[in-house]
Each structure stands twice: as structure tokens, then as C-alpha cells.
Length: 322
Image (cartoon, rainbow, N blue to C red; front, side, top):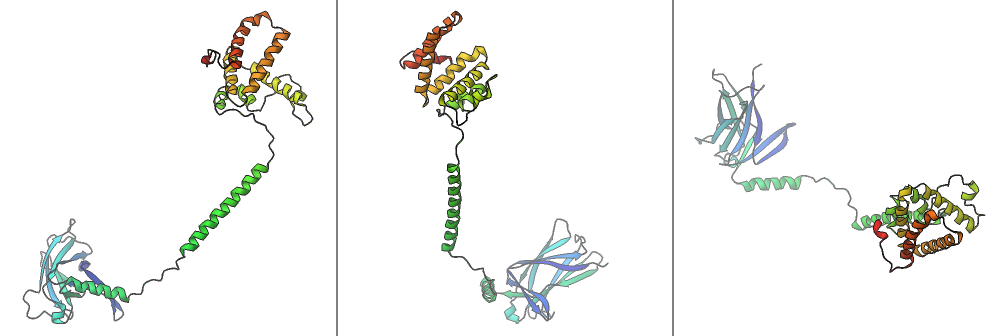
């Protein structure tokens, strides 16, 4: 297959496309004495390293330009792969001067003397860059602009946004109403925020503090149930039994420290008065019933704890252990 020469690309200030005899044609606009470039290559691609390029200027009917000795100037260079030549061209004539557009014939000759040629598309040479700018404005004025979709008024967008906010508020209000109307089945003792950090360390007492009392071993089910017919005394007795069961599951060595932590935590909360009254009454009952001798030494230490609980000005030596 014999290779042919082809114009691959034009780099000019402006290029127009128009139809001539039902065929799409191009018209390249250039400025006189201003360089533009043309890319030339073989099809199929071949090396142009040892080929020579020659350019000639004609009018659209391939006639020579009269009375002009040097109508164009050009220089060329090869791309890195040497399969394409970039030719920089300057025209020294005007289309208005000869009332015609121009074409350039590019001829490539190899070392053996064989040559092949091709011709550019019509080229219009103008005197100034402003002529090309005016031409672009004329084209943009005559080109129909695509119709844009109807733009919504800003008020409609704001109304839609407010409607969405109103719907969200209504749904949240209905959800909140359902939550408030739902009956509460568990009464949770109110404690200070700091108490939760203590109960996290003691899972056995944590269930008692949160009101979910574990069932004491060997305790009849009737003693742990909280039916609507039970009296306040029955509920207190069942809760106290559950507290003792949780206390018995603690290691013996850690019971005093953990007990002090829990009691001190509740004392700092909203139920401090109830804790003081409970310990005071328990201590009074203990004195009336009597205490084995084995607990006498421990009771001496507990008396100090009672003093700290009921006397705010008492020494805080017991609280320093935790």
C-alpha cells in the first residue's frame, strides 16, 4: 500500500465549518504575517526523518498568486517519534487583496526522489485580529441559543423548604406525644450523675441501684413479686432481701470498701436524707437486738462511719480509702 500525505490538524485563530454542495467544508482564518501551524503525517504512519517538505500557495482554483514573489514563509520540525511534521506558516498576502481564499499545497519528497502531496482546506487571510473577533461575534449572534428550562421563583423554593420543615416538626411532635403517653412500668431511683461511674465497677450492686433487683437464692416467688395487691411493707421487704443477696455475692474482703463507695455516692445525691435515716434506724435495731462479740471490733469502725454520715463536720478519714 502506497502511503499518502494527510493534513492532521490546524492551529489557527479561528476555524469555521460550512456546507458546500452538500459536503461539510472548513474555512481557516489567519492573520497576515502571523504564524499558524499545520500538522502533516503519512497514512499509514511512517518515519519522516529523511523526507523533505515543500509548501506552495495557490488560490482556491489552484492558480498561482500573481505579482508576488514570496507569498508565504514556513519552517518545520518533527515530533519525538518522527512520524509527524509540524509546519509553522506565515502568509504575506490578504484574501481581500486578491478577492479569494488561499490553499497550500504540501509536498513531501523522500531520499529516493519519490514525492506525494496534499492540499489544505481554504484559508482566509485577514489584516487584523479584530476582523476575526467581529466574525466570531456575528456567528454567535446568528446561532440560536438553546432554550433554558423555566427557572423557579425563589419564593417557591423557600415555600417548599418551609413545607418540609413543617412536616418534619409534625412527625417529631407526634413521636414525642406517643412516648409521653406510653405508661412507665419501671421506677428508677434518682441518683446523681457521678453514681453511674461507681456502679459500673460493681455489677452485683449495679442491678440493685438501677431498680432491676436480682432474685435472692431460696426466696419464695411471692416474696419477690410486685403485684398490684402487695403492700409498701412487702415491696420494701422484697427489695431489702434482694439487696442482701447482692451484698452476699460480693467478696468478703472488698465488701467494706464497696459499701462505702455506694453509700457515699447516694449521700451526695438526692436520696442522701433517706440513706442517713436507713443507716440510723438499722444501727438502733442492732443495739436493741444485740451483736455477737466477733463483730465488736468492726462495729467500732462502723461507728466512725456513722459519725461521718450524720455529722458533716466530722473527719473524712473514711472517705480517703476510695
